Length: 487
Ligand code: B12
Ligand code: SF4
Image (tube, protein in one colour):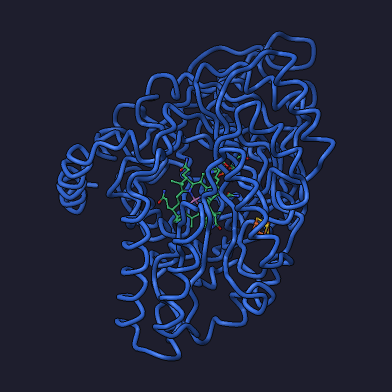
């Protein structure tokens, strides 16, 4: 079959900058899996490919379109479905990705045919086989030879040389495919989830990555590759969406396969996307040993927790020695009370210790903070002083009860803005206690701008071309306008 893989354009503030942009790794995974199954897959990354949707569909002539997306792209994805179905209703649309995994009900009113609510891809293979089976039903079947939908003759059946493996010739039924939603008699059926492991993922084919490498960076780290090594997180911070993925079960790949993938990548910098890479001391020691043994020289960006860093000074030194350059660490707040309210299970002194250790080992501490509706103007000032007097490159988010996090149920009824495009962690969605929404937003912007100004000379921003960045904003505005008219 022909399968089109759509990575939607960025929505919100991130769309106006190219300074942080990652490869469409989820689409590269799907490409790898589908190609291995004998299908013709095409990645269509709308963040930098300006071809219109209809033109792309004409070019690829897809039987199936897979769309990924985050919560902020939910409305956009609905619009894609409308346009695709209006153009060619027989195309089968599958939606997946982090938001669909948890908030699949949000897409019940879309024109999608299937919703895929798992982290792994084993059941996705079955769904594609099911769609192909239905497409082929009734098509020529002579002497055990079936014509597949790409038009290539395929010998199918046990012992024959075809891309379908033993057991895959059995008739598939939708009710037997875990982790999908599909329509039956006009009603959505939700098949149960299964817990999966990223060990089942293939090593992604990076053809698309190498062709488009110039786009992918995290500030001064460029070109940059993404590597996915785990699902979910063992900790349970109550504002966190990620911890609920893979049905709340943490699972990671073997350290050997992680290092082999890193070794195979022809790039200077790697962003390991694990929600918390600093989980297990033995795992990390083996990681360091293998990186040294294979003589790999790259720079690493990871997410990690302050408590682990605070209690593993020696290990952090060794990680810095093999190229660890930046840790995105959720420092969140400056008081025990606030940290406890997030179920963070980290103390202020551990945060302080973490900042010291990272600074002494020349690792950027990309500290993540939260401003919450209980804050006064004075609290905003204090937060600025606290951050500005320490070695941190901060990102401050607004407290967001994101749909799918533990906090959501508690705050759902109090939300003053239900627009999902505003669930980007930069918008005030709850009524502030001591000021108006407008004042809160002003304080928040002031804080973020003051911190950005203070850190403007950081090495992290040294490769930023501000003139180019301004031109990019103009380009984005133009593209947005054009896409309002022709998607
Ligand atoms: C790296 C990252 C980014 C990168 C962009 C990465 C990229 N390539 O687009 C940057 C830094 C730019 C970014 C920005 C944002 N991000 Co972000 N990001 C991540 C992070 C840390 C890792 C994502 C990742 O590993 N991708 C790699 C791929 C391979 O993994 P995956 O997406 O999980 O895909 C797997 C499956 O879901 C499946 N799959 C994926 N898509 C599809 C589609 C189909 C059809 C099928 C069948 C399967 C399938 O295949 C993969 C196989 O395992 C996640 C955290 C997390 N744990 O997911 C947050 C996360 C995805 N981001 C999030 C958010 C909110 C944002 C922002 C909106 C706001 C913000 N302040 O960060 C912006 C918006 C950007 C936009 N595109 O509009 C949320 C999304 C929540 C939600 N409900 O959707 C997450 C979960 C973090 C969080 N805060 O909770 N992000
Ligand atoms: S915030 Fe970080 S440590 Fe806490 S549950 Fe989420 S991923 Fe884990």
